[in-house]
Image (cartoon, rainbow, N blue to C red; front, side):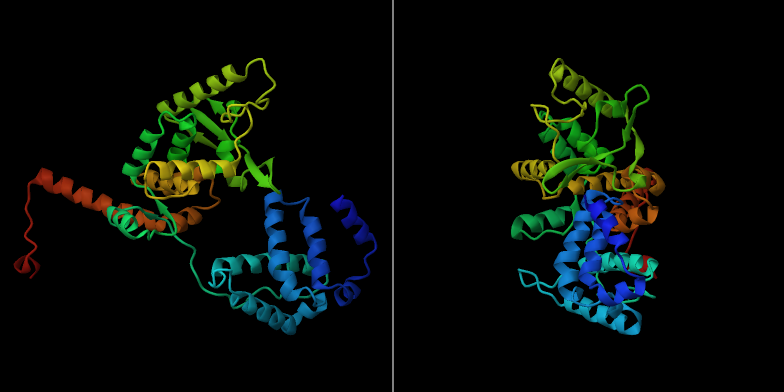
Length: 373
């Protein structure tokens, strides 16, 4: 219906110059969103729509498209972005710099399409002054951080468990019906939508491989099946013997449980007892409840993915391999996201190496003033 409406508008469109003078930015953004519905994932369109109606239309919607052209247009957009940057949230904090960057990215995409259609001669969302601010980086839960959290409640924005805490969690949930899921995510770092969408046919037990080809998404409160986050998200993961057997047994349990019924018709590897697919948001809440129940340092479900990356790094896995296994489009993304964790692991690794060398060499170092001279 949206596509048909968009086509009707195209047929009735005046020339580009007339459109630029008569159409408001609000009308253009709404038209652009209707065109995106057939090109992008529903979750992406929903995120774009939120940005458009919460930020762009309130600040720029009343202007004509022509008002955003040239130097004057760039100044208009800059003023709007500055106002968004100074916007206070409900708790009194300013809007996060990363959010401002995402808002501008949506506007830049919409104006790029306007330029392609000849409505403007330049994209006013390029070369703007944007707030500086780094997204939270993942750090490892050290004993010092854990002690501070238990004493004061203070915690890092994004933290991952070390091997000891991962082991504690997996031992605590070993009898949980979803233990194979928790184990798989902690070891291989699948996204929650990816692991929820796994089917029995995705497991090749003979060659110990698992194919990731789709994910479950929540769109307008409903579960939808879609492709992974990016093309790199479609991947084949190698499995160790234990994990392979764990998933093979899980697949057989699912087949036995729903044999002769119309439940779990798609053969999902993980479901509720009645055969309903597991919603990604339910996984998040279930995981948080388990972490709280067993008194472990708080991490999000997504942080299990971060932890899988750090465990692989600690085991000496090459960055390019970690990139592939996580489904990142670039190794730069992997390095930028996990550089803090990798750095901490590097310090631990070099300390362990020195201790090993000193143990075997039986050399005692004097780090006093004389040895430093």
